Length: 320
Ligand SMILES: Cc1cc2nc3c(=O)[nH]c(=O)nc-3n(C[C@H](O)[C@H](O)[C@H](O)COP(=O)(O)OP(=O)(O)OC[C@H]3O[C@@H](n4cnc5c(N)ncnc54)[C@H](O)[C@@H]3O)c2cc1C
Image 1 (cartoon, rainbow, N blue to C red):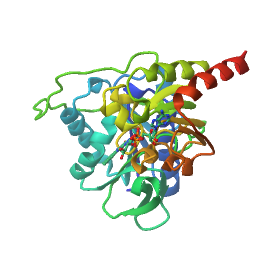
Image 2 (image 1 turned 180 degrees about the vertical axis):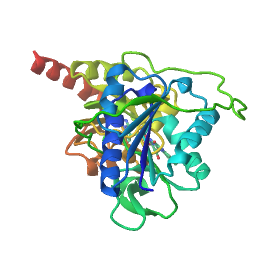
Image 3 (image 1 turned 120 degrees about the vertical axis):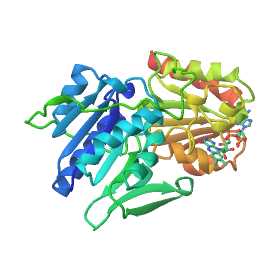
Image 4 (image 1 turned 45 degrees about the horizontal axis):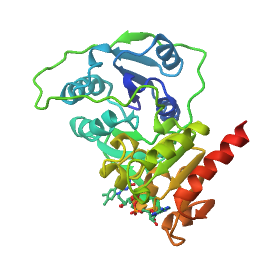
């Protein structure tokens, strides 16, 4: 069967990353001559449901999965995917999807790939491109066992245009299991009001060279003048200077803003892996040989303490 399934968590809403998954699913289903099934996990808004119904052939909603529990969700997705015998199951780049994708592939007897940036369907096996070696190379991976279960990099895929036909939105036919081996003991939410880093158009990111948590206040002030989001390297997050949700990189968030300003970040390959899709990279670093300078269009070799306040002043003046 050449069905394609997209699994979308309501927690992210129908944001740009999710729209990309829907677009990728639509194009893949069309290329394979199959149907696109959307499984919505949790309660979506009516607008989001309608937007998805204009892209997918079938939409089922599992509102009972709004409260994410990994085992329950995995069992539910297995139940919903199995009867459709899909060729591919696509997920977004959120942490729930990243956690579930390989386990779902195993349960469905398929194969999994993380962080896909391109799907190729014209050969016998579905192929997925993804960055490897911290973004230094691109691997094309043939998924020999169906279904291919892939979570996709945010913003790597274009959304799909709405079609003239609209799919029915139906409740998912589920028998939920509750005997779970794992239990969520605490949930912490990212502070409300902050846009998702993955959707940010401008990011000001700080690294270990800032020397402590206080300079992040200066970065926040700079970010506020240009409507930017603040992010960080793993070194800064691990030091506890900023929340772990700010981490960009191989084990953090994958971002693709129009402008990424790296302040006191050396540019380790693991950091580059998360931000190399940025359109323009600029850096401030005291070390002229810092690797980040090889990857940026604009670079200032200087102490950030001198540059950041000046930059903020000039940008604030320019915006007036
Ligand atoms: C498996 C694995 C996964 C990883 N995943 C990630 C990841 O997801 N994200 C990530 O970021 N890292 C990740 N890392 C860590 C990564 O290898 C680096 O250690 C980390 O990115 C370094 O952070 P940094 O650039 O802030 O610090 P450093 O490498 O210490 O760089 C600090 C920079 O600040 C500059 N500096 C110092 N003082 C000033 C000043 N006053 N003004 C201006 N510049 C100054 C220095 O010249 C230096 O270039 C991972 C590592 C491993 C092994």
